[in-house]
Image (cartoon, rainbow, N blue to C red; front, side, top):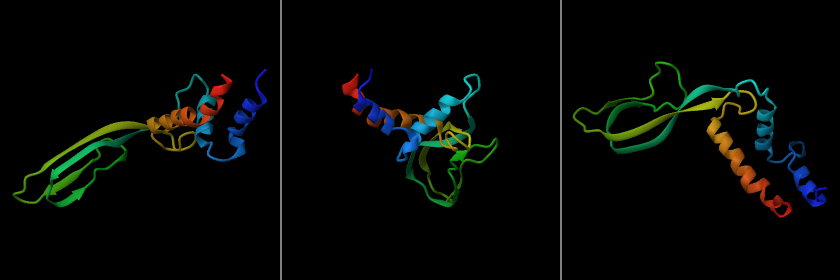
Length: 132
């Protein structure tokens, strides 16, 4: 039989009590999906991994465009000032988002799953360690 104090801690973490339990609710929604379906990840996104601009003199600039990636879309466009030397480096990557509805509401999958892991590690488990 478990400790009443541990039960109270677990009960206090339930999403129906309100507070900042959205991450646990997202985890529950993911868990409730039919195990034979793919998770609701549908949209590739562009992400900026790093940017270095040592020197850049332009007459016009568009981008970088982050977010949803469309086939053939321009990610960045700029027109250097005539005669200028451009010294820059961009590293773009591709990520995947959840569908626009629950559980991830269009958020990047890696960010949501990392936040869930961190919340469980830092907020949920520490009060329960003494009961293990």
